[in-house]
Image (cartoon, rainbow, N blue to C red):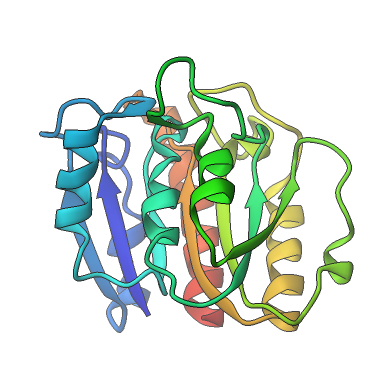
Length: 221
């Protein structure tokens, strides 16, 4: 299974989850985007074209670690690559469906809304972590899923992010993923919600959660 580590900040600088010996069989690509201007929270057109150029040869069908929640809009660029009908499962403490504050610019807070309007293959969005949603067992099984995880859905015991956070535990998140992988075809997964801060305790907490998620995904894809 292809895995890409997308460096938008220094968040992964002191993390080691993707260097584990267990992942030697994995195809892991580490790509540095920190030189691109116009990317924090909002993605301008020039930056979007440059990022799309750099990920052009990589498929959406894989695992994508996309750094801080400030860059959750990167999910949109992976979803654009899917060429079959699908449903989106979003684990997030925010719905990310707000209209942009100005113009039609892509943003971390509005990428889901943009996806629903611009992607004909996206049929439904199921969000977990914001409010009431249908049970995972009731998600229709006729379409494959793409899963997007923002670790701000987790409590601060399990992640340190750049946004306010929910109260889910990592065990609860992993259990939800088990249900989804058991009952559905999964096209791809992306994970954000790291912190731009490089403090040692921040890196330790996020590295541990990233390791648990990567372990599960590597074993189940």
